[in-house]
Image (cartoon, rainbow, N blue to C red; front, side):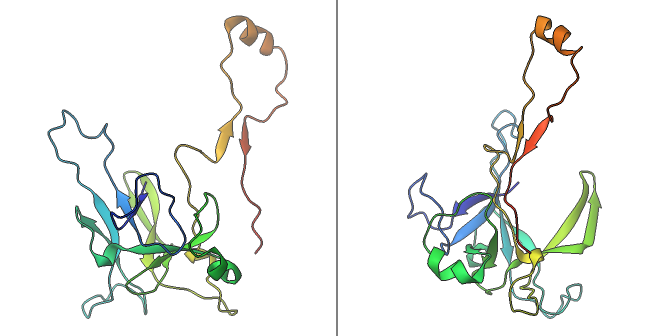
Length: 193
């Protein structure tokens, strides 16, 4: 899971990330993965660069995505934009909210982070989809769904569980009553397509 961080140290901790502000996407090890405090914290930054002559695996106009070690460069800077082009100028400089449709734009190349659903990478953690940097437009010159992302928080999950711990007396009486309540409640926005 990536975390968002402001690319410049000029913003205080706890300052809200705003649309259009330069950010970096950071992959940091958790405290549980570093045992005894002996290994240094290695930070990986999501970066991209222009296509080079030797890059033959990427299709036309796609940029490779890679991870930079410890220190981000200009290639690792991104900005967030509203997915709806009608509101981009209006939302510029306002704080980004969770679960809103947005674009992650690479600052250096002005291309958008895109999901590649046709590229499936199988590894020990299960199948994963590939990503690249390429703005893909529909016939109306609006970014396609493969370019649209949602920000989620590990602190405020999208799925709220209704299961509660029962005492022994409650669990024995509850076992005789059929369950009419759904176990989970999924909250989210309805998306117009």
